[in-house]
Length: 114
Image (cartoon, rainbow, N blue to C red; front, side):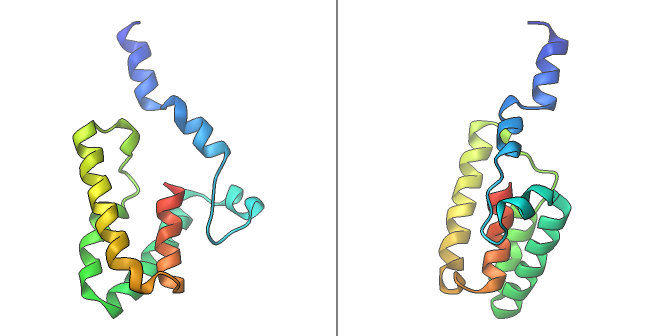
């Protein structure tokens, strides 16, 4: 396989097409979620995160790690993904007292979307 072909595969991971064709959602039905783009879902998540921060300042540490549009875990190495898994686990543990609130669901929508 040529270097050009390898770079093309990295630019558009094969599994991304499959994931984008079957979007899941906590807040929207299948027709609505199909029309959403990442910027809208991220804005929704950031508004939820800001509401959570108003309740508990410890949530601020998660914004650069989890609510980042440019991060694509599909092109990351095993170590980075394992570290990210640990951050997500910690976030879910801290989120658990707020789990059924609208702000929590907004942030989870982004994690499901991503």
